[in-house]
Image (cartoon, rainbow, N blue to C red; front, side):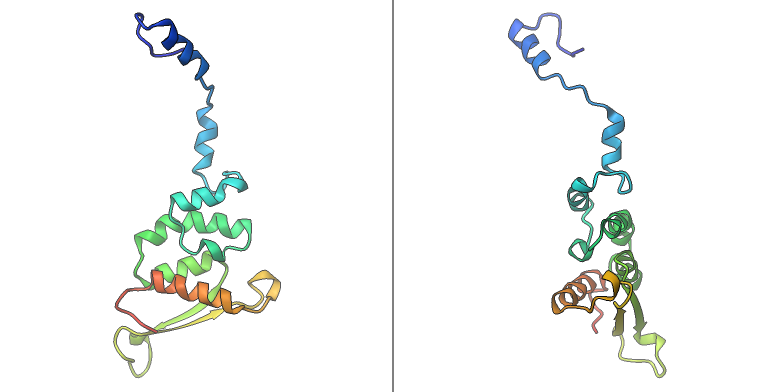
Length: 149
């Protein structure tokens, strides 16, 4: 079936039949679902939803979790919750203490962040300098702009 008008030329009809693609819309729907998307297409889906921290996702499940949380992370970007959520999707446990949560209160707009990356990352592999830099870059991207370590 094509949408050409009855007065279309033989060349237009031949082109339409040559370019006809039988697409199943159900298959296309799965491409936007991080749980059903084929693993080979996950990097493209991550790019499409602008998943922050993609280079830190070492397993396929981490990649899927990061993509699934990407929209929510972008909604709250610039908050402590965004930092916590993105690092949780990467299976990095953190302790984040903001200035107003300390006794006595700290310098306004500061925070302390401790990332626990022991048994929860790659079977207990130690944190490399490169991974540390990637975590720091991710936190810098997601934290409130006015806040500093």
